[in-house]
Picture (spheres, rainbow, N blue to C red):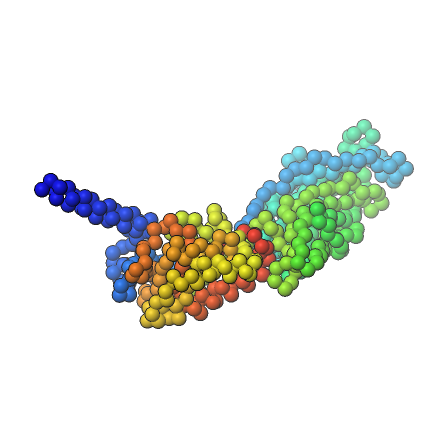
Amino acid sequence: MTRIRMTRIGRNMQRLSSILLSLTAAASLGLLNTPATAADSLNVPAGYKLVGTLDPSALPASPPPETAISEIKESTQNCRKTPADSKQRSSGVYEVCTKITGGIPKNLSPALKRQAAKNLARFHVKSAKSVESSADATCTTTPGTRKVDRGSFCEKGLTIEGTTLDVKGIPIGESLWTVDLSYALSTTSTTWNETISVQLTAVVGTNPILAAQLAQFNATCAPTACSVGGDWATPQLVGLGETVTKDLKFSMPVTAGDEHVGTPSMSMLAWPVAGLPLAPAEWKEPNQVRCDAAVGNSQGCVHPDFKAEVVFPVSKYGAAAATYDFAQKRLIDAWGTAASPLRRLADDEQSKNNRTATCEDNTFIPVPDETVSEDSCDEYPFARTEQGGTAGLLCAEVVPQLQANGTYGYFARAGRPNPTGNEKCIRGHVPFPQNRAAGAALGTFASTSRIMDGEAYLVAVVA
């Protein structure tokens, strides 16, 4: 009797353990948070188990691009002496200096501040119409800041303070320049235009030749060189309070199959019409530019420090997008999110091997058409990623089905275990047209976003 009683206790404990494990798995997939009424309203195919739901209306409409906004840092003062036989020296100017700040310097003289306050309001209105429209992303609106994403750059309110000194080191003239600039890179060209708006914002001092000045920009790229031209590559006349907007043209050509990376460094020269230039104001733009002829059938450029994101609307890609959302939110690795980006695999043979390992290993059994029309295996992570290629039987497997109320139910078919959340991949039972459309979108994204072999990217599922 004792042995029989202990055997029954052991069996009961095993049953209880199995129940607890099932509840734990369900909790990890969010099932315990699904209202009973919502689950009851779903159309559950015969022989299938509900393992999750998705409400597309709760998804975001469109994700913003990966962006960085930073302050323009104050530079050290750059000075140089005027030549002994120059007109500047004869007029009493012994040394000329420049310093870069973000926004209006705090230590300006009262006279310079008054002029700056009067002229800057007009400058920002004029500059915004020309500079902001040249960038894909809206420019930052805060003077003294710069904004950059994968395809565009904007810098607003870069201030260049010029000072002329006499032989005793006493300031005899001050000038204040304000610069806004931006550009949008092209994914189908290795040339781009940087639109630069410049204002001679304020001038004070005993030297009258400061009131009308010339300005010129130059740029270099390193380690890869770029060629620079355009209107700002030659001197432009800028009067006091006047805003001049022109382009500086960049080019970084590449040969087929190659890529080049360079960081632009800018310099601005300013000088009185009848004098010599101030010491150049120099700064480095805080973002690399990569141009390549290795992706797709064209050449193009991006900022590679910012990851691109492929977007799959559920309204367009249906069960395919729902499968990716399940993997991102319910599997342990959350592939395609900022914490776990995917990496592109360009090798066709390895991609084919990945696809075979996950979906074409004879373990994926299509369901009847009445359950999924034209059922096909859609794998995530994608076969064309370094993370793809896990054996199919090690993946979670779900049947996403659109319900009458617009939500999706995730079902596990009979004979397959419920997903635990610890799987490294997922296989979705997806109608072939949706699977094919999502695959085509991924290929187009890699080309138009210039995703290099091995480069990280993000995946977003939206409404």
